[in-house]
Amino acid sequence: SLYTLFMCITGGVSWEIVNEALAMVHGMWCFLFVVYMAFTYFAVLNVITGVFCQTAIESALRDQDEVVHQLKRAKQSYINQ
Image (tube, rainbow, N blue to C red; front, top):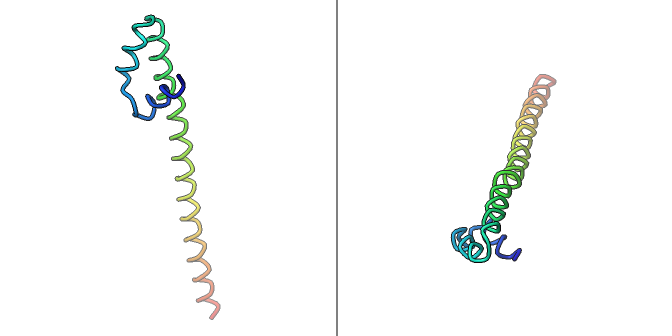
């Protein structure tokens, strides 16, 4: 079921247990299960991680730019006095 697939991805259930149960039904299901897990881990989760990291990097750059602008304003304010 979808719940079992979700549990496998999130670490709630061991792959081995699910794979053994699928092997009792048919070997093709074991293959499809491994393909699903590989796709999920290497494609979907890496994309999500990449988006998160990119957002964090852009946020850090904006913070650095803001600090530079504040220093320039403070310097200009000091010069104007």
